[in-house]
Image (tube, rainbow over all chains, first blue to last red; front, side):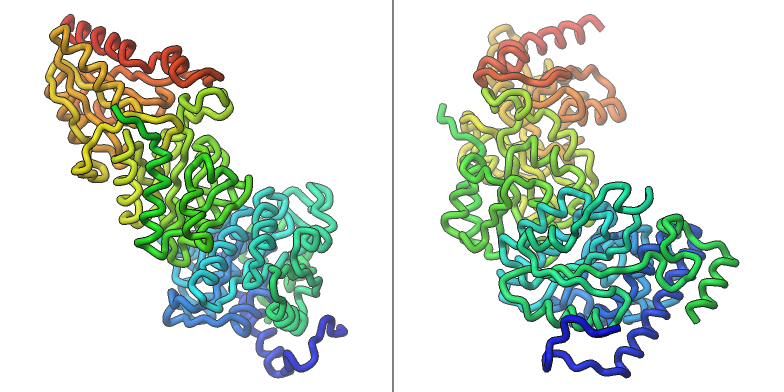
Length: 284
Length: 314
């Protein structure tokens, strides 16, 4: 695929690094399948669709220290589409915030791996989310605090395309532009499906890029499964001054597992044991 | 008696806090002149954020600020702060015990002429139903200043209910405010009025009227609805045998509800709830509305008289 928005000299692509990140994303996808399979419930579809973005953030982009998860200077990630919790947990575990074995306790009584992220229970979770539409406002608050404290950390946030039907998202979009929060970078997981069916049929959100642009954001549109494009888009976003940045990531719901791809049925249904095996074989 | 609106006292307290604590930040939703956050905005413009007419976003932004170590105070009218933004307060603030303070003004029917759409008589019920939430309903300017200061010391969400009109100053400058600890304003053993907010002054007036008839009423000022001072409630039940609650809020789910829940479980005695009945308000002057909905000293005294009589017939 041709490289879009390549900024000469700003970011040097390293083939080895890309391969390593792609392998990490595959590993994280395997975790998502195992976790939801073991839990017997959860949201594999939207976790798989944004796995490449979150992998890029946790394993290349963000300045974080798993040994010191509350380090004040750290970059923040807010999973506004909190139902993709299995993805966040897999990334945090792989990054060393807690043991990988704990992933299989997802959704069990007493586990810090709640059905939706709980910042009080699990180190590395920056904001409790799950009720859709609230994460961007929270990210803005963190970004304002960075400005007040003279800190240079950045706040990344991941929204779902169904999620932006929530009116509060647009309140927050307006506020981020009004306060010129150029330390906020948002991703839109544009997979086109929500629980009741195609986003276009349930409640169209198009044209998304134009909407965010009209709200005063810097907007890029990328292939959300192309690691190189993801990294380049982040690099370009970080260079933007005076505006928050939206990266619309074109994605496939259930990406990586053939029988889940583009199937709305896999939004919130866990794979059965035989389906886990088939999925893992494909992700090997 | 000198009258000061609790919202005015809030505005002054914020400016003091702004000087003392650089982590205090203030958010408003286009009502800074009415909620009195305008003073803070003037002195500390870099720490004041007008969020426009978008209460949900105001609370969500405050959650993020708190997660990054700030102590945000959010202000708007009580109806919007607690009603419009309820689920954001629940999930983005209270669920994670984030250090967000919600100081809402224009609570109750004394908003007056704006009418029922703007008269919040459910906010105490909403806020006290949330785990981790502290709920303060100050009775006067002194108590408001103390409650705002106490809110900063509490690690976690706090709701402070403020009113529009001037209310009598009941406390001297030596008043000591302890969160969760009711203040006995007047002793008596025939009945107890447990009052909150602007109804504390009304309760004292009612007790004065009743004393002339030989009925000695205890007046308890319940400035903290949550955590409720259960010991003060149980002592009132045990020692005076009947309780009348008084609040400028629906009789459902507020102070009356909290007191009744406690009394039922621990020391059953009759509890009569004086408040706004199960209806929406309407336009009118604050005094006219208080009269219409039975929130005057005369009405309250009549309810106490009735309560004492029924207690005697037991």
